[in-house]
Length: 88
Image 1 (cartoon, rainbow, N blue to C red):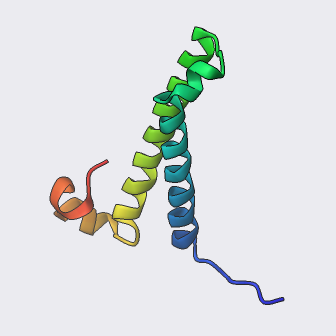
Image 2 (cartoon, helix red, strand yellow; image 1 turned 90 degrees about the horizontal axis):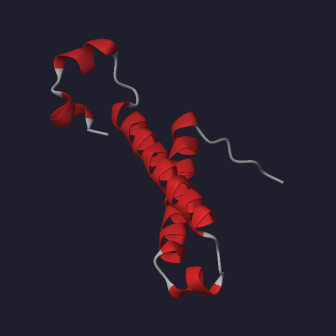
């Protein structure tokens, strides 16, 4: 069995892709009839909403890391963060 050696960047990209899929699924659940049918308490709904916000923030952090991947401190200090390095 041949194993693929992923680079660290590829692993972060994969993690972000998987996280984005989970964000879509949780968002769909929270804004669908399924949440009513599940008869969840308001506390549980609040916790799921907090989980979604945390997942979204984590995705922003991963996007930020990917935006500056491989750049040196000098490169990052020279460029405008929003234009050159991405904003998160």
